[in-house]
Image (cartoon, rainbow, N blue to C red):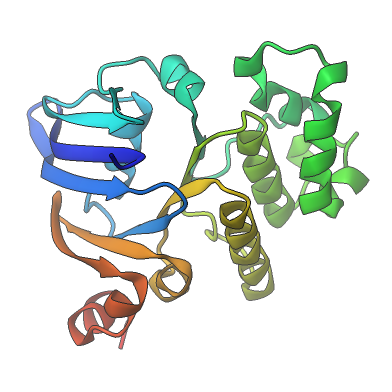
Length: 237
């Protein structure tokens, strides 16, 4: 069984159908990217996986268990974490307090979280330097590092990442994608929504292309990267 599997998932916002029977999977150890233009349904797919919206029909399985219909807290407890679009850190809390909140599903004492926090600091030394700063005072790149670190504090088996490069300089984008690969090599599977299609496909094992709520193409990252149709539609070539 795949780690994550969506089967014919249909969702609505009110009377408007957004996802029109999509099916996709993420195997253990994979980076899978989800591409598409604005309004294609990428973020809605993420919300459906997280339990923020419930499918009208179809199913979502995680580790062979049905998770469609669960509330978000129970989905996270199963081993899925998210790095949301626009980061959504807690601006009035310090860096370290943000990280501690990321581990809430573990219900662990603060002293016992120390090794995990130090691991995050090893991935993002800048966060250690800023550990007592309020999250709202960090730069955009630092806030993205914090959002990723906060998600990793729950020790997820699957990490959902929604537009991690948004608003970042090219240098920081390179750093974030290097970190994504490092996280994956450590054993965490990743489902990545990303407007920077070329960068996403260059690191992805597989990819799917969404268009108006339907999957219109799928394949290995390299196959999609070198597809003339995909390059014209999504890579601006």
